[in-house]
Length: 335
Ligand SMILES: Cc1cc2nc3c(=O)[nH]c(=O)nc-3n(C[C@H](O)[C@H](O)[C@H](O)COP(=O)(O)OP(=O)(O)OC[C@H]3O[C@@H](n4cnc5c(N)ncnc54)[C@H](O)[C@@H]3O)c2cc1C
Image (spheres, rainbow, N blue to C red):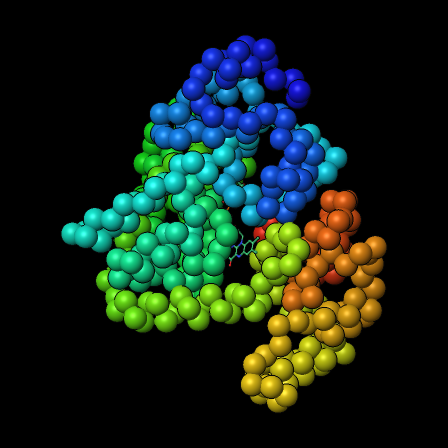
């Protein structure tokens, strides 16, 4: 146990809040990495969430809130203390008069997006394939295919460290590309409930957009190995091309031939293995087993890797791109 006070243990075993103990994160986490975690708490409503936060702070137990863990890299050599999962804080409501959708922080983005479709509300189509929760999506202003959370978010309710509730309007959340006020290190608030408002749209048009994005995601996203999605918030290829004229020529030609002109087939290829192999050679990238997807060098895969190997690859990319692209995956250090 990670120095968890006995008094906290007795509070937890005496209360009704669901929890799991001694969880193996290689089973639990999306990227299938990490050591063990002493406790994962699963509050089912706002009262329970407030209780968890209040007592964890009262007993000075360090903790981290998690959604689906789809953006997190837990470290293999680290055992963690306590996590609060929002997985059971999942609900959706729609008010047809105001066209407002209210979503629990633990609701999955695909559910939110399909719920909007069911009510002919537009603005959520691009979120359909993101495998994360609504609360975390606000935390990092998640988005894809031209839609992001900022586009439709009106306000959120958060739980403060003492367990009380505070409301934020979207204008006060500093929502920018993959960032928000909640991502600041000094912020320790948990997003419990989110209010959105989209425009009424043509249901067939919304459906068509979602189908297109869904199919695209199946083509370009890694599905075979545990993955962390994009490691960096930007194109690794574009950044590498700035550093090497020959790679710039090769990657530009590759883009024109396979993606723009589609000379050899009507569909662009779903693997960039050939281009990746060239990048690995030209930039002297080293690894034991390839730690990225054949579909994109910016997509980490866990193919039996130790997380030190993953961190080493991230470091190599950071150096090669001169740190100009912000990291998107979050490495969860010991807390
Ligand atoms: C295959 C794949 C594809 C992806 N595609 C996209 C994409 O197209 N666009 C995109 O933007 N992202 C994408 N992602 C990244 C990820 O899914 C999103 O960042 C998502 O919003 C993370 O949600 P989560 O519930 O898994 O959060 P987690 O990974 O569990 O947590 C992420 C961060 O949010 C914090 N957090 C979680 N819940 C709350 C809360 N309720 N209140 C406050 N803080 C909270 C956590 O402490 C952590 O710091 C992808 C990931 C994968 C694996």
